[in-house]
Amino acid sequence: MTAYPSSPLMGQMMDQPLLVSSIIAFAARHHGDTEIVSRRVEGDIHRYTYRDCERRARRMAGALQALGVGMGDRVATLAWNGYRHMELYYAVSGSGAVLHTINPRLHPEQIAYILNHAEGQYLFFDLSFLPAIEAMAHHCTTIKGYVAMCERAAMPADSKIPLLLCYEDLVDASSDEYAWPQFDERSAAALCYTSGTTGNPKGALYSHRSTVLHAYASAMPNALNVSSADTVLPVVPMFHVNAWGLPYSVPLSGARMVFPGPALDGKSLYELFESEGVTFSAGVPTVWLGLVNHVKQNGLRFSTFRRTVIGGSACPPAMMDTLVDELGVEVVHAWGMTEMSPLGTACTLTAKHRSLPAAAQRAVLRKQGHAIYGVDMKIVDDDGSELPWDGTTYGHLLVKGPWVVSGYFRGEGGEVLQDGWFPTGDVATIDPDGYLQITDRSKDVIKSGGEWIGSIDLENIAMAHPAVLQAACIGVQHPKWAERPLLVVVRRPGMALTGEELLGFFEGKVAKWWIPDDVVFTEALPVGGTGKIQKNKLRDAYREHRLPTA
Ligand code: ADP
Image (cartoon, rainbow, N blue to C red; front, side):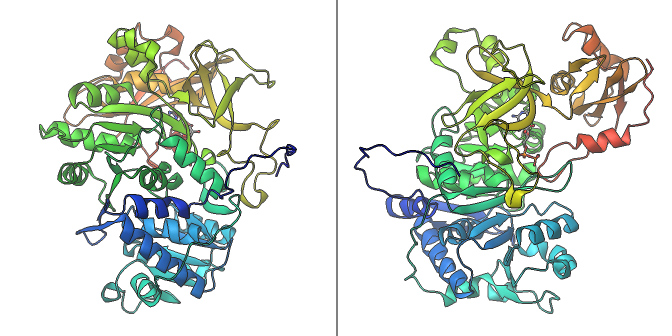
């Protein structure tokens, strides 16, 4: 940790550490009656208030203390978005322990690897994950107990899980007397592992300070723009980079919260959006695909939903156009990553853009956006020299800021910073107004004859074709050009489309040499645990594909 010099004249302001517990304490005291609504694993709807949430979080913090969980100890969760998970966000971190959210969509072996690597002491889980836990419990060497997030009556009988505890029993046995402890704001608060598409997963260890600062900054108007007038439904899971910080920024803003539980299909989400009057949401493009299709196919409309953040992978322009023009939902395209807590940029217009024609405004909004205060970024060439912000020169994207990792948990991956900057692994352009556009992940860039072709642009064009549901573009070997683009496409149900027709659609939309060499049609694309298309799997599947030009 860097030690900074102090001035002979220090400010005379209260020295209050920025602790995660202060967020829920604020919400309970100043927005005490505001609701948290959850669709539970059981299927029913549960309602209570920030006041209830904070009280139960304190009781759970007391229960953790009674179990011997101390400062810095890791407590893991395998859970959907719901009120008990929210309580754990505060009970665990607020007590000084470290909340380790695990993606249940990972392979059980990977979950056991992550748990052992993190040396987790307790694992809290939603009942839907009981079979997975039974299958892997004997591989988890550091766990002292498993806590089923349910009432006593719902506890599984004859479970093979050793040391099985009941969540509601722990809350009941604890008292309201527990008071949030105060400690150094740089203490670890939460731990998230990257999905590890290459190599083993690596842990990003957030501090209380980084989490609170990220929550402040991400709630601002140029970012998520959350206020106490909003009802927020995080579709992005609480195990995917802390639901992009919403469990912190929503109570900090005093907004009403609606948790969808495990029901993330278009129909269930639409019903909840309507019945609870949701105004704002956030999720990855694959989830919006399901919701938008449901709404369009059934001739439905949103009555309160006004704005959504889309990130995690590039938002296809066709999806943005449908949401904005047909369904009246403003789209904020955002970029970030696990290593950045996650928010780095968000795309909103400045005063200068307001006088532009609608099409030019939309062109700006398609980018990943402007850095939010706290994040600095630059693009560099292979030698590390900084490249110009001209909107066309692309390079490796580096970032820095108080909510960007300085290294991985337990030193995994060694020294990661380059002169104090974190290399994101993304390739991007930045325009003169400071708007970032991601061209690709560096490992997904297609290298054709020494030049780079960005796969995101090609996918966006393909997805603008009315007969295309989903498209991914990968590089496959070519004897002359080293690599050439291959499009892997899922057609919309009931629609006909040939590869030739689709390639013809690219004419005039990109440079000729960017046009893919071939198209293959498939029933579905492989999707990973965080809802992103797994290009490594596609590359494996089409490694032997012979291009017509080869
Ligand atoms: P992982 O998928 O590695 O677990 P993250 O969920 O943290 O990790 O994903 C971070 C990566 O997702 C970024 O580095 C970037 O490649 C991609 N990404 C995130 N948001 C966007 C976006 N709006 N457009 C394009 N790519 C994005």
